[in-house]
Length: 131
Image (cartoon, rainbow, N blue to C red; front, side, top):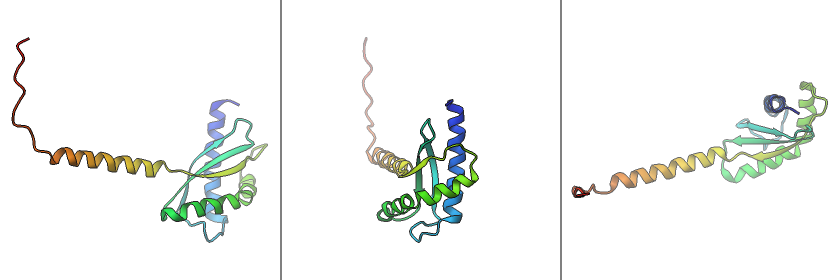
């Protein structure tokens, strides 16, 4: 399958799966603060990894991903009604940690910058070399 078509399928699935999660999944563990960040479909369209991000305490995230995984069949059935695909992939939900990693890197960089600014500046300049 061509790369462009696979990218279009991934984009379509991302939108449809998000819509199904928001409107049709009524699991109390699945909150409305879930977003589908990325979908990676296998070239044969039989499997798809659905990456989700959510705003909640870190200890609740694995429980919510497990709830989504248990509802994967339900989500796939409802999403397949909205997508015009010959095969609808089997969904596997994964927690997308890219945002947390980005924030952690920004925090580390801010600490480095703060430490750099708190150091006293050297008033002595290096003597010019005679080379």
